[in-house]
Image 1: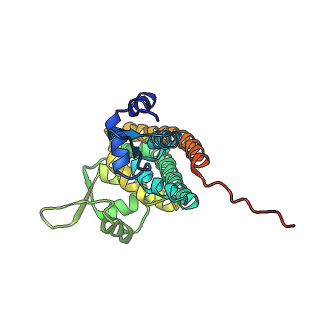
Image 2: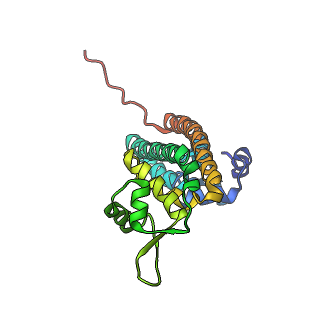
Image 3: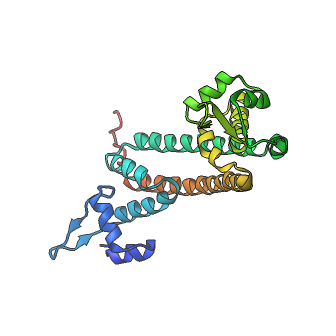
Length: 240
């Protein structure tokens, strides 16, 4: 029998956290002693260690998906869920790399010096960034850009900030980048916070490098858990 307080101290968490994990069904229910105390085993310790190790790299939502599968000896199902999470993270890494590439365009650095007016018409913008006006309307329909309207005639008018955003969008589209990254960066590319937008993209990549290492650690503990709980192979009698 292993006391809850011993496990909690080892993992740096509270005993109430252990009870939460139990109530969520992500560890096997422990037996109870005559006085009602939980009887934790080495198997429970392996579950708790795995949960804590995987949490920083994958999050509790994924853990709550896979731990019941481990208890049912469905390791491959659990592994495919883990694999899907890592594939999604890889896509996010590509998006961050592409966002940074778009934000570091030399053209973007010097573009503002060529903008002398406060507002521009859709035709003027189309000429400046070399795209058809129909493309600008399409991006507006996709909610990538929302130009103001001239109060006198209702025509679209684009600010210098709008044009910088459109330059980013054009670059991403012409390079066949993920369009979703536009929505993550267009609000950060005003002239005063372009450097901040680059920092966000770089920080995101650093964080993803941290996550992949944490996921490696979590995967190690997942393997250790399965080695602890996997069924013993069935021994067959040798043929006579």
